Length: 385
Image (tube, rainbow, N blue to C red; front, top):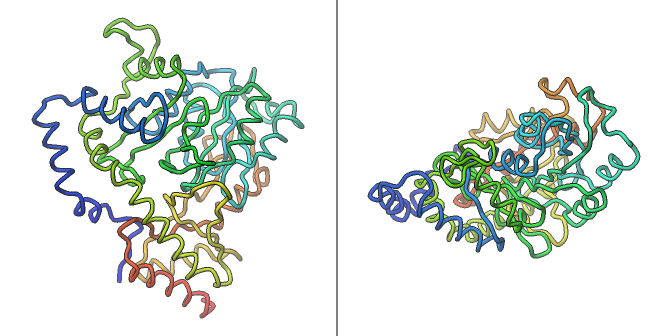
């Protein structure tokens, strides 16, 4: 048996008529960039998230980039980010000429550890002295809701308020997840989402979203996505071309009504994985923090005793697709060597990168496929391979 990490063709087959009708509607309209489909999607997703403004952009990366630009983040500014996350979280900071300042993670949730965040800001007057890039001031924090589990937003927001920092939530992997009853992405000053095809709510190409309850910030992001213009050809800001196109918006509109049902399916599969894998020595199933809903963009286990890569190879030989998100923390990436970090600086991020393994997880995964995955993992450990 072959078990994919993700199979988008099954989702398309289930809602083919709705998707095809949405695409046909756009083709027949002749409106392909922004326009009514994007405006309708922005209104619908804003209502779903419970936020005042939703602005469609070209990608999740651009959502982060435009959010920081809206906050006037640039050279001389420091932005605190977790080291254990997708590259874009820190890459956008560097692309603006600002400096990423890396903080370690909570080993249970894989998200920013508030204690480490406070320690960084209080006990090291200069998180700054660790770096070769000159930083005038720390301006913002980007908490990431990794794998679909919310970060500890109460603590992060309290620290941000104390130090007068902006908070830009990276919710690229967590659409629909809730922290104490509030959708993530709507808690900080701005929230960012990705509609990359593999996401829980995925387009059929790139796409992203910025959300906020701040009228002024929303207006700045809207201008920034169209070269800083309002009206057309009158440029108040130096922006860029980052527009969600109408085809992607129409596809997302067709998918959005199914999102909660798909999330529930992921959560059922995750609970079943927990039950089947829970007694296997050598692995650790995902932790769920209290008062938070995990939407399982990934179902990520820890494999102890240095056996992660062996297990992954064994599963590959059995036809089971897995992935390591992420094999090298950002503070050790070659492109960030100029910041002066070294191995051992962020031990939990480094340990996670050596232990995490994401198993097949998507709403249409069958119990038979899941049993096959679990059986293969059991066989690996029982045989002492």
